[in-house]
Amino acid sequence: MFRRIVAAGILVLLAGGLVLLRIYNPATSTIFPPCPIHYLTGWYCPGCGSLRAIHQLLLGNVGAAWAMNPLSMLLFPFLTYGLSREAISYLRGQPSPQFAVPGACIRALCALIVLFGIVRNLPFHPFDLLAPGGMLKF
Amino acid sequence: MAVCPQCGFSNADNATFCTHCGRSLQSPAAAPPLQATGVVVPPIGTTIPNYLVFAILTTVLCCLPTGIPAIIYASQVNTKLQLGDVAGAQAASNNAKMWCWISFGLGLVMFVGYGLVATLGVIGSLHRR
Image (cartoon, rainbow over the protein chains, first blue to last red):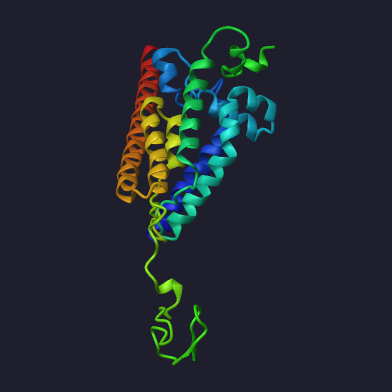
């Protein structure tokens, strides 16, 4: 029962967040918190543009969503699947699932995330395309 | 009747060894597993969570530097399980969980901090008018 209440609470928060993201554009609105990395250092982090990407996705603009953060869009289906499995395990009272991905693949993904974070800060072509919205400027 | 798989001799039903050639008549599954390959398979049913989804989520959405160790530990869980190191995998799992919570906590602190600053900003601008 307790687990169901927690799950329902998280679901309500998630749905509320999606509704807010559908209505307000994080690019122009101040109700969403900025990325702490970008706020403090001025650099783009690997996740910068994710909220704007989800906003564009909710409006049906897949191209604009891709331009905001291509890595997030690539990871999005896997994360949705993974989160669903986590939620099902939690509701059944099972431990968090262990995804049977080879460790080397996970380390490669980690390297990809870090590399993406570095490369999208490079101010010259073609890497400037990877900055949030970079692909919309051309 | 238990037929010996080695010599074909018909033994009594409750026989554990063939009376003709001496071979064990117990099913192979009951025999102790061979360790010849050196690979220790973790007991079936042991799941050691690697928190991979949360590690990636907190890295991408919250705070980069503390999410990286979470992903690395998540990868170690699977690598160590493959090698049969259940204790090591469990330790890596605990570390992955801890770093996920640290990332989540830092993200939350940033979120609340931003909310406070934004609220103070709104109040401040009201006073100036």
